[in-house]
Image (tube, rainbow, N blue to C red; front, side):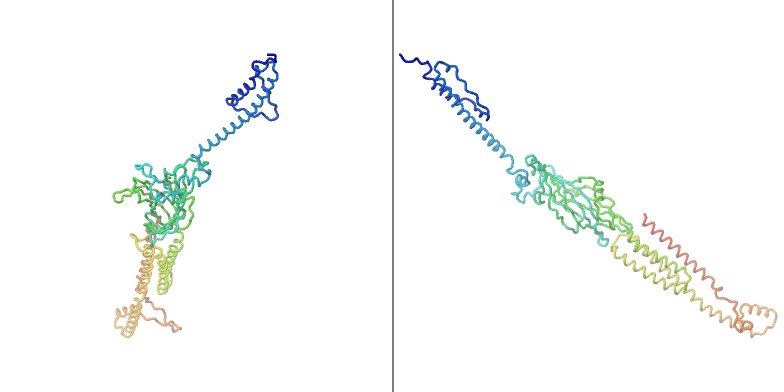
Length: 500
């Protein structure tokens, strides 16, 4: 009663303040820590605490500052917890879509599950739709013509073959792998088209057993080949001939309903690239390339085939210098001997020597030509005709020599007859004038050679055997010029055959 009067809310002020602070800690949002170097704002005192009891007011303000610091510490902890929860949530959300280690080819291999593949994947045709065949695109580029053997009818090529196809079961998204869009893999990792060359008789397999896999499932394989092919060589115009050999590529394991082979570029584009990369500059010159796509029917099933027709032209310079020109030179020498002023015996010796030299050139030619052919080559006709003309020249010379030898016994007989008639006319007496006149005429024609005056040497006789055999020079000229015109006709015919 007589004590100091209390404020109505003075006794319960601290308890009310603690309850307000507790409710504030439970319901208020987190408060960030004050910036270092800046003094915090003083807490405001609630209006109901601004009464006459100043002691209660100070206690309420002190309690409010303490609880504010606690609220700041609790808010900082809640903020850190939320940041950690967000980081963990992001990590857990992306762990199922991205590989553990990015930007490596091993991750792509793991993603495609190549390391655990069995060999069955390399034999199964990659078809997503069974009604659509797998399309394989080929690109051909000829690098070199290594050899052409006419006797064996074979030709060796070195070329590069590029194949492209798609496998819809081997794809990935480049954005998930740092934009890695392709990877190189061994050839036996996935299925690859089995290639079969129809005309192949020998060769070496490719050492490049790798292929490139694109992110969209596209495969690219480049393989070099060195093969020996059988080719029907037509050597009618040897050595001025042009040959065309076929290189047929097929895959007889899959019909056209499962696999279709197509060319990626046109024949002119492949020809242009082949000529730019052509390495050899030997006997054969690469002139043209043609491509034919067709279907080969075997046992009522169609198989896709691509045929590359390679045309090549022989450079004849070596054969002209080694075979044709020497043969022509020997024949010209034979004609010079035939028309020369030498005796017939010497002509025959020279002509036989020239025939032996020509036969050696024919042996060299025989080693390079095939043993069988439908038609004999023009160069064989050229050598054979030249050889026969040389033999005809020898026979002409023998005939002339025979005619000259045949006329010598006739000369001896005529000379004996001349002496005998002259002696008989000298012994027979002249009985009358007509007989004397005839005797004088006979003595003038058939008189023996008389001795020259004062010299004792016989004078030249008036009778000559050549006058009796005047047909010999004419016969010789007829034989020689007929041989010349026959040779001219033969060489013209050979030139027309080679140039047609």
